Image (cartoon, rainbow, N blue to C red; front, side, top):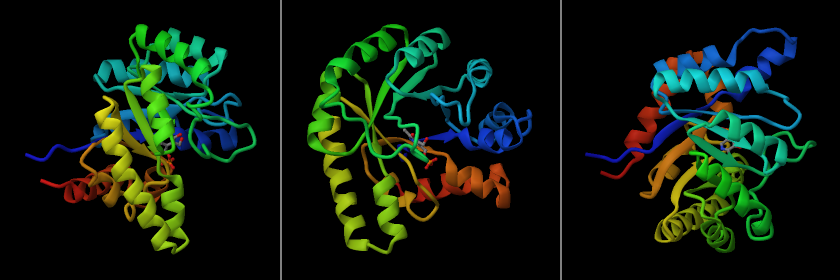
Length: 251
Ligand code: PXP
């Protein structure tokens, strides 16, 4: 039987649409419930410092939903004191530490774990001791992978944004280079005892090659799925992503 990567659905952009009008609709927690019914293996949500999409009470309601559905909530957060306190209180099954800049449109680039080792390591330890499985969102390069392993984190998530952009721009050679790096880096991370996830900018068109990497244990996908749900409905958008991932996976 094929070992399939888990599909984590990031529901941030349901909250983006809600916040455009400032009311309660569409409710990202109702969206998470729909994603779970449609076969999501996990729900991912990023509580940003500026609360541009998810809000504190969303995270509490998401955690309640995920616990009752026995589905992991993966909280994405910056390595700040404020977020650490929230995550320690919330106790999500998983936490993914990401870099964050107020002026960015989305998470641009990976976390510099190599330079930030002394700051990140105690946060990883506290979250892990509190029962969350910690992931670090990094670029797939040797020094970051080795630094991630030294923090004691259980997981690395490789940033696929630049790969997705290269394909969008028609830079196929560049995309091929990124892919080769992912393959090599996934092996290294696995050898160092890290579980390997991938995320950012993944679509029906570019997910296959990533899903085919044998060490890939989880994919976290948000913007494209939520956007495609407008046309297909969330059930069919998730089902189609699942179909492509399943087909791409080596047997
Ligand atoms: N993984 C991480 C760590 C992210 O920060 C994001 C974006 O919030 C995603 C995955 C999902 O990216 P996208 O919305 O482009 O699918």
